[in-house]
Length: 349
Image (cartoon, rainbow, N blue to C red):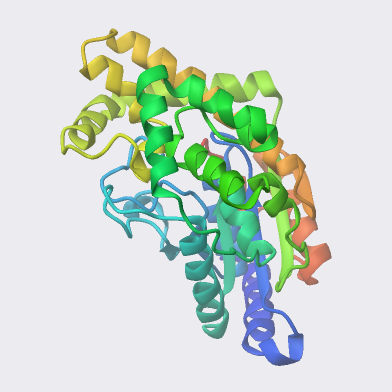
């Protein structure tokens, strides 16, 4: 780390140690659709600003689900502390409220250590719930209605269930994948119990942050992003995604488990059932991932406070733009000329 980097890191450390006088704890956030290049950039930012990274990916919490979630492995983290990775078994539930509570605790602990908390990920609701302190009201449950919807999905398929949600809450239907049975049923259940759409509950949340917040969003040309998604999935297959998905599925995990809603696993169910070829499952995964990226971007467009940076092949321009944003928000300046760690590009998440 250069002298300029050390100075910036020390400034962050000094500011974060005095949370009371500073008012709100600082929180840095990097978001963007899958495959846009968040991982490599996050490591360079974390080294420059003395950060600990909090994963903002709802699927990376699960142990053993590594390739399909594009999880950054311990030997790739370059000494940067990462949180909320490998903290659940695939058959255990994990919710937005769980993530929010963990982050609230971690942000205080990281700040108390004189480090800068840094959320990196693409799960829009998870990240936004932390940034703006969403309150999750208990809406109750209706087990009989849930069972009715489960049976409907079994009889008529995921698309038919998704269409039912679209009739009562099109905004939530746009955000949720048709295969995300658990969340679709929950949205239907909330509407039945309260007469209110889940999207309306989310829209009513206050958008005042409890943090001194800096949100950076990465974007790129849609066609280039889709090409990167396809190439990433080809690489995942070379790395052993088929074997990993088979191992997870053959444990007998319920197909509607939270972990099975993530991309990279459920798409292999038809193949393992002998209903399609492996190449067809891979094409299904590519299609679903492209659609997921589109939904991510749709979610981010409705978030406020994001400063967008184009993620092109010129890594130096990208990191320069990021430093300018952080400097403007946190009052920390880094000189990036001839700083090799910032010039080494990558094709991370």
